[in-house]
Amino acid sequence: MAPANFFDWREQSHSFVKMAAIDPYPDFILSGSGDAKRLAGAAVSADFFALLGVRMALGRGFLAEEDHPGQNQVVVLSYSTWQRNFGARPDVVGRQLALNNSGYTVVGVLPRDFSFVRKASDFQSRNQFDLWTPLALPSPPEPWQRGTHPLCVFARLKPGVPLDQAQADLNRIAANLQRLYPADDKEAGITATPMSQHVVANVRTALFTLLAAVGMVLLIACANI
Image (cartoon, rainbow, N blue to C red; front, side):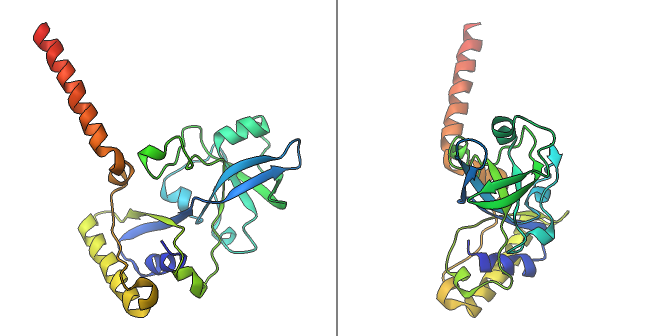
């Protein structure tokens, strides 16, 4: 989705406790200690890890004030990156890194069991991130940020708010954006999808086929017994 629309969704919706965005495309070159290494990165809004209920293995997640241009030179490492590139040193928090020839400070390390993917089929592909930085979108957003669509957005429903009520809330926002920005949002809508359904959407048929096959094998085994 468009970064400018993300601001509007977050500010105008009433159905969610938190709403966070991720840009899954940044890459970084880690230099300064031995051979340079290319690392897959992701940029996220400050409350992304809090929305997912993540507890860091070391350090912390991002602060709200770090989610602004010029204040975003901080980084959270994946557990495997911490082990592979920094020898699992417990003093890595606070360390200065050279990423894309700019200085970043390590503020946290993700837990061992954290693995973020947008789709089940992505589990071993591009969405396994080595490090994370703040999204740091300019506020208010620039006009061009309504015509580009690099973000994925996640939200946590308020307690007691059903999905259909949240969808009605988002439909209201979408209609307002279509009216205000017809050049970019005339044909755009918003669909709220449960996370579990979203993750398995493109492998759902295969999963049900596998389940049916396993059930048939079990049935045959029971009949033989």
